[in-house]
Length: 296
Image (cartoon, rainbow, N blue to C red; front, side, top):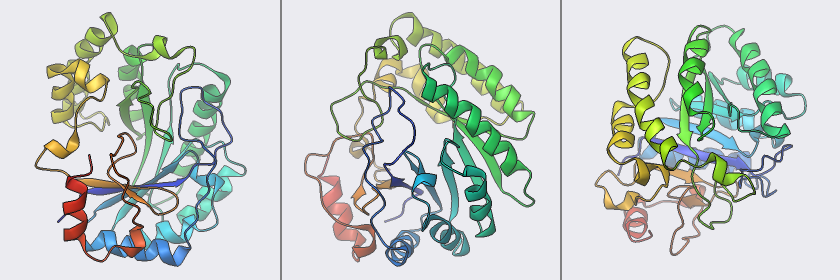
């Protein structure tokens, strides 16, 4: 069994209260640094090449993070830490990550989503990212945007602006709350204005050739042509996240690990039977894959 990447949901603590976010349920990181490093060894054993450390806000649960990120980099796994830049003393923490071997930083940058928290996230995140860019010998810097019906027409301009500063731009799509505790999106009074449907869904499809042109011209937009083509081919299915990864031969291609070490197929999908196994305790990936295939 091999995977491409892992996502570690480092903590569910966050100083913000973004209306559309369902991640900040308050749980902290509960494994020891030694247990996390054992878990990363287990990921390395199945050829994991990349780990994203994210949250809620990973800098809010910081004590073990520099050591664990540095360890992953030291054994050849590329990492990034995804932050909003709003945690207390964020620049000092980012410097400590760098000093411990971190080579990549990403910030959440949700263009025109609305609300005080989202605006604060954009402002603080960019300050921290530009500070990161001052360090020598970093691998990369990136913004990650949740595209909505209100901001998708502005993303191409954002890509051009960020590329001029040597910053990558990534995106995912907002989706409906599917009643899954702790997943990314939740219902609130304004959610219908953000979701893709009707003319906005077709508008998103019309933007995809622009994104592909930006890629061809060398702008730093990090989305595969395959994913972009899927949006064009099946926009409603993609926008509502109504596919099932386990139906594809590539499954599983990555894992998500919760802040208590629990291994999940993804933080975006409900599993019928949660298999309560911790990343540092997995010793037989063949058995694990067989169980997981029947999970979803």
